[in-house]
Amino acid sequence: MLNRRWWDVTVIGAILAIAVFSFLGFGPTDPIQRLIVLMTLGLFVVGYALFARPEIGTEPPTWRVPVFVAIAAVSICIGVAAGPFLSMLQIVAYPLAWVITPDRRQAILASSVIALAVLAGYLVGGGLSFEAFVSGLTTAGFSVAFAISLGLWITSIAEYGEERARLLTELTAAQAEVEALSRDRGAAGERERLSRDIHDTLAQTLAGLVILAERAGKQSREGATDAAAATIATVEQVAREALAESRALVARTAAVPGELAFAAAVERLAERFRAEAGLAIDVTLRIDDAAPLGRDAQVVLLRCLQEALANVRRHAGATRAAVEVTSAGGVTEVEVSDDGRGFDPDAPRSGFGLDGMGERVALAGGSIDVISAPGVGTTLRVRLPHEPARVEEAR
Figure (tube, one colour):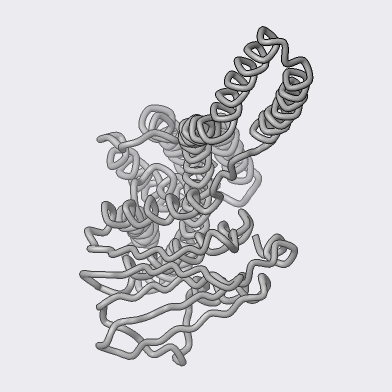
């Protein structure tokens, strides 16, 4: 959607199609009106090239955005006044308005301006008659309603996808960071362990070998051949034990904890929503290292946590929230509570956030509970068993 070449082809193709159909009998037949149609189409293309195209895929928006909206509105108004068929320019104008504006509010405002331009064009072309007003209001009303609905839907999907991608990126970064930290800590811990083990085993054994060797030498010098031979046999036995001890030290390895990445991702997610929403978010982690949580289960739970915090930010009107993660007995529970306005969980919902969350958790073999009422805040609990085969399907 944000590729400029794609938009070049779309705009030029739409303008050429409108021009061709206008001269094939769908537009005005008067030569002057046809000239006006061509001029308005040209004005729209110039406005796109100079003001809309530079804004595609760039942030933050500049003064070019309102200038293009004004040019598009003037072009559509004049074109529709010359021939109602020029209202087809809305096909390009509305999507461009949603692409170059920074947020929903400004996109809806730009769409409304374009719709008013269509209505004004019908009124001017129809001589300010009642029939022209009804026709223009119908055309503009249906068009802007459809454009705003489609724009809101696509924007929601795009934002959801961006949040998912950002969450996975953060989880991957946290995993890499924890792996590097684990390697450093593991190396330091391994050195300490080896130092202790060498002191407790090899060093003591080698000290014993030195004493036995000195004894054997003394016995040999004194002519106690049998005693010296027995001592040397003992030296051989102790040396073999030292060899076995050294092999055991080399074979021993240290385990690297696997739950740190998940905990770090939870903290990062809470910190991001603290910064974005200005919420006070308390995080409590009780994770059982003896029952590690697989990466796929981590993704499912983090998606649920992300959606829950997003709901707090968008709908709850809360000042404080709490996140509690408990992992024990092969089950992990994520609880998110807030002090917001609350709602009736049994009431019909128009969104798909909670329903989508419930389906994802159910597919992974888990469960979700929502406890809320108007005026008392909301508590959401997600329980998920550590079953990688089922969790993989829910990702």
